[in-house]
Structures are given as structure tokens and as C-alpha cells.
Image (cartoon, rainbow, N blue to C red; front, side, top):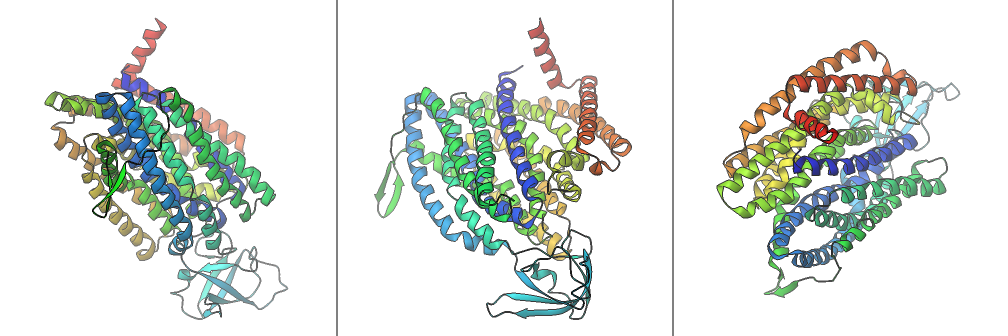
Length: 616
């Protein structure tokens, strides 16, 4: 087993703890609040600072800092590397204080731009004493303007509508094309061919929650720099376990404060979870400080800035290189996060619960990607950064072979993950989320989204391996240009799905992400081939084809198992569902490894040789 495999598995084990606790956090959210407009508001509010965290802190800044610090540490020693860290930390804090202040002030404007306008409901009931109905055929009477400037949709109903409290609203876009006097179906439940009535307008709640959570980006940025510094010195486990501290703090403190605000965990309890997000960011940073101190880090304030000719300049060349690499890297690293943010904004035009379905499916989709794609990319970056110092054909060949090994290693796990999550999506979602207010219908919706995401899982995992290499080669502008093209494609496809074709299934938005990430991977691969002169395809392709062959066998088996044994699975009790999925998972897992053995997959042979060597 190579050093790459060993370090990747260490990072993978740590990331597994992080992602598992992240799933636990999502389970708590959905169990307490369900796939509702209230949880949609929380996730939408968190999406703004969290997108900046993924793009800026844990994406471009962490990668550019790791790349530059690795070279400084090798050329000038650890002391010079820690001096660079102090300069970047000081500059980062100054920048983030300004960003947080602006975010708090502009949160209301952000939410106004994201949320489609809602219209208040005026329902004139002909028989108010009748029993409320879950679905009512109503007559549309038009839209009126209230004195405060809000819109009001007027309907005539033969009987009251069930689960429709005072203050209920309706998306204004859903009635703008209706002719006055037309008959429509109204319901407060998620039903086909019925206009969905929402209990209240959650835009104000989303704005408040966003204001509370903005300081999280400052703490997350410092945590990401700490992670990058520890990676330079070969520590990959602890930095990823720090994210588990964030998840556990968010769940524990959020439940405590949320219960104190509202023991019934109504929408106002989400204020407690917003506060817990900030405290979780603090916990994520604090757990890394002892390891940094043991490696020699001593915090010092060192801005290394000066005004010259009316411009603010960074005087230290290494610190300046970090920020220059980061600027295009922010764009490149934000490809997927930008697509997720775009999906969220379009999902707000769909029936309530669409944002929650996207978020839950995305967490499950990212689990295998984070376990292997992110972990391998994290290990690849420092080693490739040092290889670039050779500056000859031998160095480029070493990089290409290193990347080929990394991509095969990722594919060995990503292919079966994509097959299982794609075919058994609804069943897996039900195990994790179907409890409390998250019902079988929500599991089916989220499972459809997960299946659409899985079409791009292999490309996304490969992209996570290749993306940091552009920073190591100091060629970040090509991925940045692609990011702009990708965002344009994402907006165009989502606009067509939602506003042109009027698709109401949120899975179409996830399909957009799969298309864009797959295109990104192929661009990265062929552009790196041009830069390096080779991508060691003779080392990559044969092993990859064997893995895909084993994945095809796995897909056939999973499809047959689902059709024969998982009939009406979502309506089973939890324990039978868990037992059936565990047994089926063990069986198909064994079949996959057997297929890999028959196809002579190199990664399986490497693990087998390592295991037999230890036994001997």
C-alpha cells in the first residue's frame, strides 16, 4: 500500500466522523422541523455564509495557503512557514471583520432577493360551519393590493381548508397566470395538481437567522487556515475531526437553546440553532490550537501591509502569492457551491420542502465524495506542491502518475457509492431521515433528488482530486473561467426547468448539478494533460475500466434486489427497514468485492497484499 493510500485512509477515517456527525445534525433538523417552510428558511439563511465558507475558507484560501506554505516550509524551514501563517491570519481577520459586518447589514436584502413574493390568502367560505377538507376546489377571484403594499389572493371556497391557519400565504407566481373565475385545487399538504398553501411567510425569519449566523464565516476561515497548516506538517486526521466538533456542538447547543425558546420546537426554536452554528464554528477552531502549538506555531499580529501611491499593498511576497492564487481559486472552488446556491434560489419557487430535500440529499451525496475525493485531494496537494519544485519532465511525469493513482483510488469507492445511492436512494433516505415530522412522502422526494445527484458523483469526486493541482502548479485562472461558464449553464438549465417547462420536481435542479460537475471534471482532466504533457492514461484507464465493470455488475444486482425485496419499503417500520437494508448492503458489498477480484482491480489487490503482509 502506497503512502498516498495510507494517508488518504487516515484522512478518510477522520472525515467519516465529520460527515457522520453532519448527517446526525441533518437528522435532528428534519426530525424536529420536517420538510417545512420553517426549515427551508433556516437552511436558506445558512446557505449564504456557508457558501462563502466552502468557496473562500475551506476552498480557495485553504488550498492556496497549503500550496504556498508547503513550498516555503521545504525551501526555508518551519520558522519561515509559521511567519507566513501569522501574516495570512492577521490579514484574514481584518478582511473577515469587514465581510461579517457587511453581511449582517445586508441579510434582509439577500433574503428579499432569494425569496419569491408571497401573497396573503383571503378565502371567502360559503359554508364555514362545514368540516375542513384536506383538498378544496376553489374559485380564483384575482389578486388585490393591501394598504401595506402586500398582495392578497382571493378565493371562494365551498368548505374550510384543513391545516390553514390565519396568516397563511401562497406563492404569488403560482396564481399570476390564472384567469379570474377559474377552478383550482387548494391544499396545505404536498399533493399533485394542487396549489400548496403555506402556513406563513418565512422570509423575515430567514433574514433574522442569517444575521445571527454571519460571524460563523470568520471562525470557519480561521479553522480552515489551521487545517491547511496542519496538513503541511502531515497531520490529516485532527483537522477533519474538528468539523465533527462543529456538528456535535451545533446539535447539542441548538437543541438546548431551541427547547428553552420553544419546547414544542416551532419555527422560533430555530433561533437557538442559529446561535449554535456560531458556537460550533468556535469549537471547530479551538480543538486545533493545541496541535498547532505542538508543531511550533506562536500567534503574532503581523499585517505586512502598507499604503503606497494610494494603494494598499501586501509587502511579503509569499503572503501576496497566497492571496493572488486565492482570487481565481475562489471562483474555481465555488463551482459546486455556487450551483447549490443557485439551486436553493430556484427551489424557493417550488412547493415547500424543496430546499430541505436538496439539503438532505446533498449531505448523503457528499458523504462518499468527502470520504475519498476530498481526503485524497487533501493529501495530493502538499505532495504535488513539492513535486513542482523539480521543474523538469521527470517531475511532471511523477505528478501525472501520482494523480492517476489518486483517481483510481477514488473511483474504487465512488463507483459503488454512486450505484447504491442512486438505485436505493429513497430507501437510504428513509433510514436516516424518516422520523418525527419527516414522513414517507418527504423520503420519496429526497430520494429522487439523491438519485439525480448520483449521476454526477464520480465526476465530482474526480474534480475534488484534480482541482487543488491547479493551485500547486500556480495555474488557477483556467478553472476560474470555467466556473463562470458553469454558473451560466446552471442558471440557464434551472430557469428552463422551473420557469419555461414548469417542472415542479426538485430532482431536476439536482440533475443540473450533476451535469455541471461532470463537465468540470473532463475540462480539468484534459487541461491538466495539456499542462503536464501526460496524465499517465496507461496507468489510469485499465484499472478504471475494471472498476466500472465491477460497478455494472453491482448495479444489476441492486436493481434486482430493489424490485424483488423492497416493495412498499417506505411504509415499513424502522427496524425491518434497517435490517433489510443492512443485509442487502452486506450482500451487494460482497458481490462488488468479488467482482473486483474477478476483474483484477489493482486497488483491491493492493489492499489484499497489505492485509496479508500484516497477517504474516
